[in-house]
Length: 443
Ligand code: LLP
Picture (cartoon, rainbow, N blue to C red):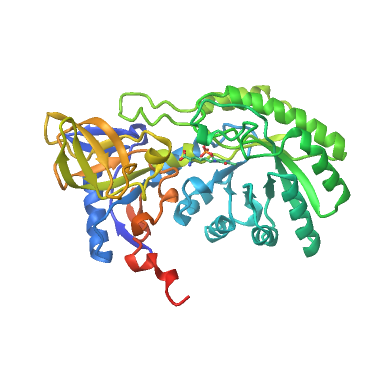
């Protein structure tokens, strides 16, 4: 059962980031103290739950999705489900006509279907699709399998032939283009596990030419995540256009689209009102792309973070504080099992006190409760004096936050809450302790 609380707030998207008003933190113009008080009440009453949670804003989500409206001529967009995959979020994405889904597993196909998308509105990426997942994709007539190796193409052809259906595929090419981002999220360089090398494409053309059960609908690249400038995309576009001409010659058939993947970045360090947000120059890029793209192919995208990251925060309580010589150690009830990005990529996420109660600042390490020293959100940051019981807000936690959560230390998955102008909805209930080990009983 979906739990809904009726509220009334006036969000102002022009104030979308953080700001203190009368020492209370506001997020896109909304007083977070009022909202979290209501959420706390609801979670305590309904689930006897007092832990951390993810809070998403429907207004911000809509605002980010509308940024893609009408600026790219003819393009189609496939929201990258893996960045924030809650079904109720996907249902919001569904309201935007120019959006389908980019999925990376069988279960993400099922999520998409549950949210009301048809298979025709999904593209399926990933280097290791299993035969079960391929069967599922064929059954639901996916728009395209974004294939990553010649062996995968052979496997899809075998399965579609067995089932007497035609599989549409898109070759994800490895363009060997570097981008300026964390090494773990560079995906378009030669040494990465992703994509098919251009020199391997001959084998793909052979398979497609000789089989009526497989069709090449497009070519794709995905360069990486957190890309801040247009230049690598234009480089990749040239690369795709060149390869598309070759493909059409080889196959004597037209291909439908080129996809430049996702990766539009946001700088999480600019988060206070008054400082403009630094992010990928989307509108400028679209304009330039429209001007220069006179090739016959449609150009599609698979954005994730650009939409989901600013739309969510992690809400956490301070359990204990202990003093070390130089810094205070603030132990929160949220940890790396809830948001792993600082531990895994040394990623920066802004940490903000919900309420400023002192003009004095101190140096703090903000850490989680998990038995592991990598379990921290920030080290040595200056914050107004914090007390036990205070609330801390971790910003830009919408993308790759909840979805990368784990049950490490047998910690339950935390709830997800969606706030709109007139409702607070629990879109994922808290997992209970026994939920975590249910699969270990009665096997
Ligand atoms: N398309 C493909 C094929 C991808 O592999 C990805 C992300 C996207 C689209 C969406 O990229 P975005 O627009 O969100 O940057 N866990 C990492 C990010 C991994 C991204 C993997 N690929 C993080 O927390 O930074």
